[in-house]
Image 1 (tube, helix red, strand yellow):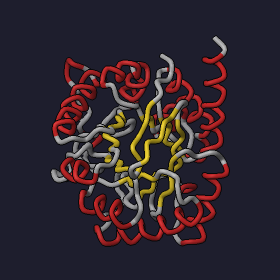
Image 2: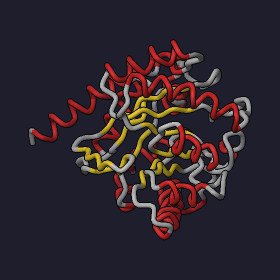
Image 3: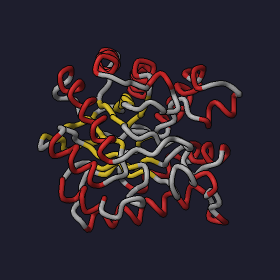
Image 4: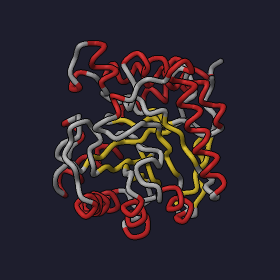
Length: 284
């Protein structure tokens, strides 16, 4: 399925995307699963952000709370401190680039949007870990990335039984219910994320990928975040350091199935994949 153009209201400005977008990851954390994405201080953040921009990032996703199983808990105050540090450097280098905040906490999201110039909320829990999140998104009038996950990062991999309905139908069903709830609150810009690696077995991740076109029934842009994840490393028997090639392959397959946004650690290879994909479909 070919890419479907989409638009987002970014702080009152309508931005139209005529080709798939690449979202570069900035982790202001000491314990994110991929060491190459970790930044600890202003200089490290600045260097990483500049590279993402130079490599062609269309968006940036900033995270200050690692969602990998076994990661340390982080207080809301510390999460906000890290985000403030990161946003200061991002805005010095790229004042206009759309930035999403990777958080499941409504209060953190509100502060980041109102006072730290964040534009988009990226919630790994799809509103399940903070019941105030949907109302907060509606209040802030910002785009919302609605991801599928069950439980918490600590318990999610024990919650992979989707019964006879199967993982793809179950995930679509869950997202559809939440999209309806958000629409009733007046949320207009919703991006869906199937949640690769979250509450999914290795095989279920690949079933979701193979069936990605089915998510177009939700009539929302689809974000795919598989960068250097265990669905690649476990299957190939490699480390995350060696998973760039596998990431590019999976991203390309996702583009062929209509992915609108690729969330990645490595922007240049993803941007090149998008460019080659667009050249191919425009040559048909």
